[in-house]
Every structure is written in structure tokens, then in C-alpha cells.
Length: 360
Image 1: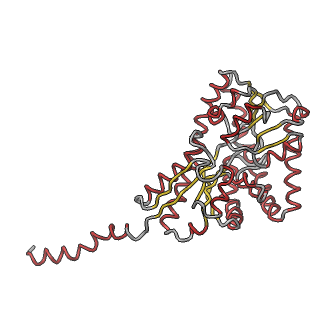
Image 2 (image 1 turned 60 degrees about the vertical axis):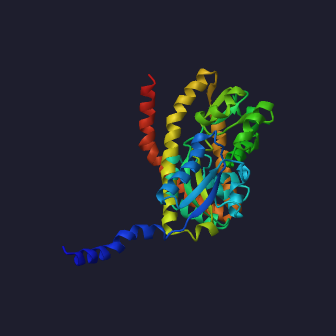
Image 3 (image 1 turned 45 degrees about the vertical axis):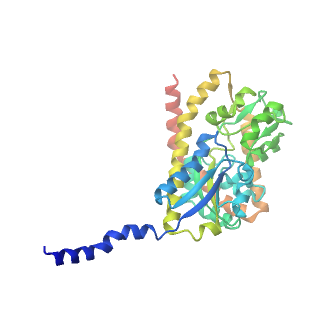
């Protein structure tokens, strides 16, 4: 090749070689703040916020950075949705059922008493219309949202005294979230929603008599076993507990499509990883708790039966007063019932044999 041909070839190739660098500069640098409803000590829950920050940066060559803050550093833990709605922060990690005071229909998108488990709830959200209904609601809060993790089925909480019958719930001061609190109120208890960091001191001082949070891994970290020894199962009001990443609509709309995709990819990764971490950590933590003196208890059957009845009464009552609640319940209940029938045939039949066989 002569010199003239070499120069011409180099000139022709130059735009191709420069294209990746030019493409990288087409998307702007963006800096967001994201506050979690959970503290750093709740490492699996706060992992959700940290992982969003890490993966979005990786997927955008660090041009889109989201700084994760633990509960309380910008807004109170129970007001993350409010902070996102009014633009104080661009996004947050929070369970939507904490905001049922704004609209009880929000509870569907985290968990309802005797609702679907992780897989069943996920199927409704992704294939049964749940995500679309959730998006419709969040638009009224000036937000968009994406599923962000799950705890799996939760435990029923820590109690200072045994619950032997329904009468033992009368006057019980119980820290409990979501519609589960309304169920226990109907059963005679006095529910209270308290942020994670404040539960232990309330239980220690006797301000409350019992508290539920998530399960062995988190409960051990929060130290509930040091101030209450009766540990109940299952958390029938939280057969799963879906978290959400909520994003201010005005912050979301101008994002480049690549950045929006990065957020959605990161959220999908967290959804699977979080429940896997809980499933791996909870059995180990439970052995430590029992070894340290925790007394495992199952709910008395009359409590479970009464809760089932009351829980469904509450759903029907809300549906009679709230048209949107009714529309979502009319979508959710038949889907859940179909899931129950399928799981009864497949998963539950397998579980009933295998779990018992393994315990011999």
C-alpha cells in the first residue's frame, strides 16, 4: 500500500474508531439521591438500595450515579414515598403498604393477609395485571415504580407472653405493618406501625407487648430475642413482602432510554437476589436464636381461622367503599385462588412429604 492509500484508508476509518467515544458522550451525566426505608444494619434490605446504585453506575459507564442513603438521613423511614412525591429526593426504596393511610389499595402491591407468596404475588404483578394497576396508582403520587426485592414469607413476631387463644390478643400492643394491623385490631389487639430502628426500644420499655419485623436474620440483628422470647409463625399477613423503587415522575421522564433500562435491569436483579439471600440466611439465624433460648410457637388454630375470616371481611368491606380497591381485589382474588389450587397440587404436596421425610 502506498502512502496516499494508507492516509486515505486511515481517514475513512477515523469516524468508525471514534464512534464509541462519541456515543458515550451522547447521554448526560446524572446524579440522583435514593433514600431507603431501612437502615444499614438491615443488610439484606439495604442491599437493595446499594445494589441499585452499584449496578446503574456499572451499566452506564458511571454517567448515571444514584447515591444510596439509609433510613432517616434525608426523610423519616415511613415518609420515603412523600419525599419522592414532592421531589425532595429523586427516588426511594420502600414497601408501599406502609402508606395504606393514603389509600388502602396500596397494600396489594406489597402483601395482603393470606395473599400470594413470592412466586404467586410475582405472577400476579407480572402476568395478572398487578404492575399496570400499581403504575396507575403511583401516577397519582407523581411517581413511577418498579419491584425491588422481597423477603419471602415472614415470621409472626416476638411476644413477651404466649398466645394460647384468641382471648390473649385482647389489648395486646403489637407493632405490625399493613393490613395485618387491621386484622389484629379486629381480633382485639392494639396495632402500631413503628419504623425498624424504633421497634427494639419500644419493646424493651414495654411500650408495646409484641413486634413483628421480617424473619430470623433481621430479627436477630434487631435484638428482639433479648426482650421477648416467644417467636410465632407464620406471618400470615405477609406471605411475601414486595419492596418498590419509587421514582419521581419529573426525574424519570427526561432520562435517556438507556438509563431507564439500567434501572429496570438492576431492579430485576435485586428482586431475585434479595429473596435468595433471605432464604440462605434465615435457617442459620433461626438455629442461633433457638440455641439462645427463643421459644418457637405456631399460632393456635382458632387464631388462624379467625384471622382468615376477618381478613377477607376487611377486603370485602374496603371493596364496598373504594372503587379502585374493588377493581384490584376483583383482579387479585381469582388469580390468587387459582394459584392456591395449583400450588396445592404441585409444590405443597411435594413440600408436605419432603419436609417431613427430611425431619426424620
